[in-house]
Length: 478
Image (cartoon, rainbow, N blue to C red; front, side):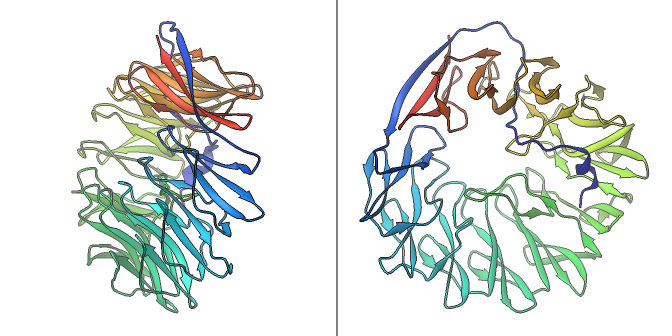
């Protein structure tokens, strides 16, 4: 859909910032999380989001069981592939087990068993709500698909789509097919109006509104709550950059709410003839366009757009022309909403970052991160960082200053007070942690198996596997 995206190479790297700062001394300590036995399956190890807990699967000829914090759970006939999932707050563990007859499956949440069902979607089968209080489970029975939420079986449909939780976790929505050729949106278990097609349920940041796109008689329209908006030949779809917990990738996203929930925008029209729509107003027509971006205070809106050979950044409705090709996900506002930056791919194919209208140095590529971001501001809005490539190596660039180049960079993160920058980097065949440009001392053979988590303003943590043991690794700036 988005033509601009084809000009960028989306390398899966973790983004956040790095810059040259005063040399620091790092102290590395470790805490053992678990040790696997001969019965354990090493590939099954999962670490909680806060890197303080570990779980894995044991298996012998008599059955299979999960082990959490080195405490074994109940033994079952078998566990479904990719069985262990921590909640976002790291306090809960869920997985799917198989009945002794191997004809049904059921969820085990916090050691409690849900009702068994005939079949289970082995991909994306479990999903926690953002607040960790609810768990959803895609399954089937009697030839129908349905969603089980918190152990309660919902209404059956011919098929159902990905679930969207509201930010506060209290509401949910998904597409369902009640009969051949018809689709509808189910909100909190209640089916809505039938349409020819339904896509992209999106909740407002305040969780009060849900919006989606429906298709009727070959045309598409946005629906907010139960209110239908103006119809268009089509509404542009963008791939979601924020996959839901437990999912491999996010669903398509056609509609965009402002952070305060008061504005909703989308692109309506047809291929090569797109207009940004907000309420009853629409922009001028564009041939190509990129995903719209609101500032954190909801006062500003920016997106990239093109017409012919000309490319623009449209900021609060005013087009700014640049001699190059925009990258739709390559733009960001600072947390205080006072700064705006975007990526520009020049006509020679090299890329740079434009911060407050001023273009920086050129690079061969600028990478997107594992969380879908390209540019990252520090929490205090004072620093801007990104990952750039030169000569087949990647450097974290903070405020225009490049860190040491590595073969790969991942999990870049600022400290909560914005004073330190940490990321993971590949040095040859091993991975290390870099804080303020200094490599932490990690034992030879340690394999990093988690991202980075700042415990406080000076300590960042991850998890490593060493032989059959898993350790929490803490790196502290002295």
